[in-house]
Image 1: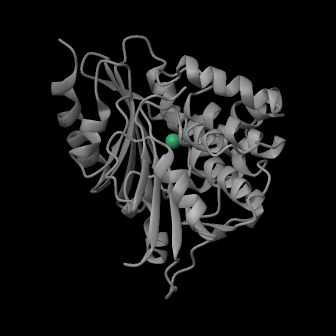
Image 2: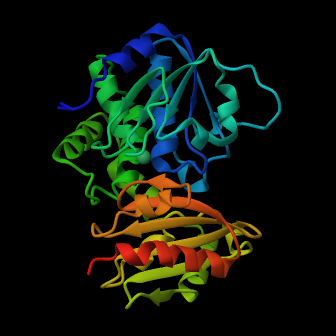
Length: 320
Ligand SMILES: [Mn+2]
């Protein structure tokens, strides 16, 4: 079912340890949160200990996932490095932000990820850029280990896959992804409830934030690049992961950009593209990364400079 990925090293890693720290990238998204929760449940069912530590409290839209309230947030200060750590959905240890302090020189690390720019930083690595999501990887790993998947684990895995594939729509959705989805529904994942919570239900402040972003919509390069902006005040409503997709809905737009002012003068950029432009390369120019059609980076500069620099990086990559 998964010919290009060898799960043996990861399975051996999980068999060898008995007390794991699980973590993921800063600004944990649906796949990040759900893959941590699913792996935690799988390890608990093996009689092992597993705690999840993230850089921030997961966003409200993920609070429907069972166990999310048990996730700890790294509060700073000195920590004793973990003996065993699993880093999920993160291409490098640095992407875990302050949680990286839990990983010391003697920590055994399993790197479980599907980002193409993954640095293979683990003691053991289960990495494939051809898999839809880290949740799909966790599913394959559980099957390879002969582990049964209970309804709550199925729900978490299904949620992460649904999130990363935009509802089984994006190009990384393979026939295997759909088969995994079917298996998870059979195992008890409640498909309409999960889709509703992830995609069709938003608190009012998030919808108003979308309105703010749409009011800033500007088009460049012959209406092929769409740029939206959220200032620091608008960010009080939370981190708007999918606002950038509205830019890409516009016919003819090849690259959509959302610039967010996280802190005054500090910007986080989300990039989305049609298949024509590799935005991971654009993000890499600014020290960021991601996937061909979805990537991100951070820039410390005023708004106008950020937009000018991004346009200069994107325009030469547009199809002629
Ligand atoms: Mn992911």
